[in-house]
Image (cartoon, rainbow, N blue to C red; front, side, top):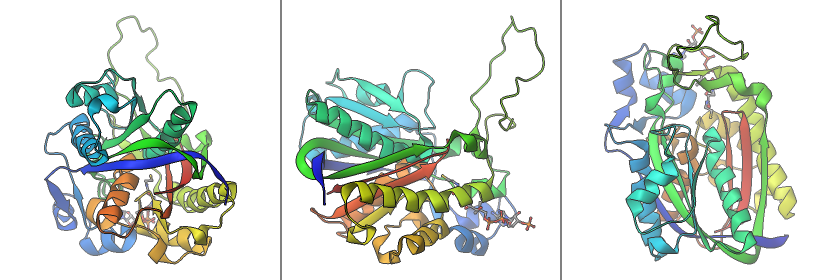
Length: 333
Ligand code: COA
């Protein structure tokens, strides 16, 4: 096992909206069934915003993580928010969270790597921490997929939910840490939600610029489910294997893998490929659905609170999603 400069997770937090939508609720809005959704995805229910904005979910999760770390807001040296469903183009979600936390003038940035956002953010945080001038990073993953889900499209609307989860990270010398990050822009069109358009009075061309991307009605999320499924079942094991290889450990030496919660079948297929039993895979998809970048820290939160993951455990966060992006990091909790 290779030891290097890594991160210590000193605080965790989570917040989800009160409102829930169970499979039976979807039977009332689209032609689907609890049986189909359960068998094909493993999802039973999800939390859905009842008007609370994305930043607010993130703020509540961040407040819990800061309290859990036993620090003051002024101790945070950097806020990284990860979201593909922000409330504004500008200001960033990170700035809105900082405003809510108060007593902070640290740098605050958003990143958008869709469902891989948390893994990318943890790795970015570790690089900032390794430089030494920043002592603590607050990573907040906050998502409201309900903002761009088309609730008339049964193949996508049943998959997604809203949630936020946050961690406080500090530098940890001489510890287990490795990461593997990747992107494959050639698959960009397989999972896309278009930005909002405005009228431009100077525009002279009526026709759409051909971006070789889907042109959805409004800004709804469009997905080629089969292509994404194929990508995910390869990307997940590849990311875990590569991150483990860099740390000179084998996947079976991990105490837990916390995968992006997109579909239980994707996770089962990946576990088989990795030669891991499903006991190693942390799952909470049945209660939340796919909450994009919030899904990994949300599943981690439940596993820590239930005692499934303990201090000192070797864990692997692994994400995949729009972009297409994917990646994993291995660390000691
Ligand atoms: N309820 C009932 N039937 C549905 C349905 C629903 N909610 N959604 C789709 N179907 C139907 C399809 O219309 C199709 O019917 P047809 O055979 O009459 O045309 C049938 O079910 C099979 O569709 P298919 O797309 O082959 O299903 P699937 O087993 O591939 O499951 C997904 C569909 C979306 C669940 C699956 O492709 C998937 O999980 N893909 C990856 C999605 C993902 O993870 N996205 C996020 C990545 S971050």
